[in-house]
Image 1: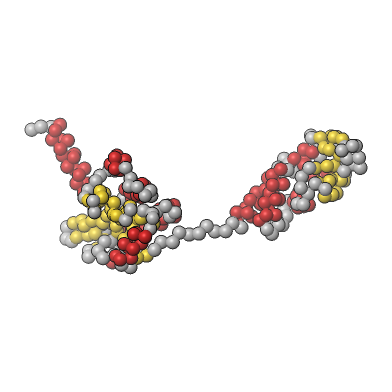
Image 2: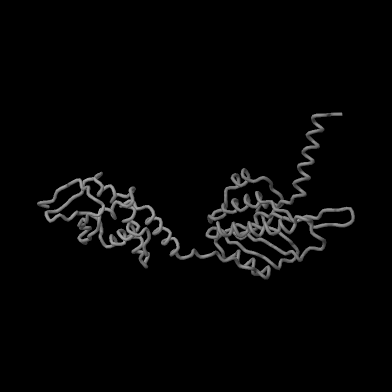
Length: 297
């Protein structure tokens, strides 16, 4: 525009300047504009950057001027009430970032985060019968994970760590359901017929794996029920059941390559079943065979 010119402006902190911000006019002091040394306004009005002025002496700033008054008040007082709507806060955030006013930008970001609507929490069906379980699995297009939790099914006393491990299984179920609820149907069975703590994994309506977390241990005078927390195995089976998301059955070679064991068969589909005692027994037998080969009599 004719008469506009760029100048380096540097004056006393009490000197007033006229600002035209996107067509809105403001009148303030250089001291206010340079109060925070790290902002763009401080650089513009301390002689470090050129500013554009018109023929009437108004300093032209090519930004939306709607929220510039809030920015000036923040520079004056160090705090300012934020707009009520998220749209206005987002607009103010953009201006605060442009002028490099970090504290105001952080306040806007915190306000936007606080105003966010809470994400919907996943819903876990609690089944009360075998018929409900079969119905839920048959109508769902997702693979399914079922956790049976029945502490009162125990005939014997529990070992010292069993209660803690039972809670860990429940906590892991909650974590997995929050993480994979959009891809896996999670079901909790709290009135199962006999199991105390058992995970079952279903794909295409059939059980494909099971992780049993309970076993009977023998003390000197009585039997005890032991509840374990095989976290790695549960994670493994949860990830493997994701292979059943597609309508086609998963590649059997891939399933075999990623499986740590295959035991039993359920309706023609290979099923994994783990118990800690069986694992220890297999490990012990393998160790005995190895020792026998290395030390033949």
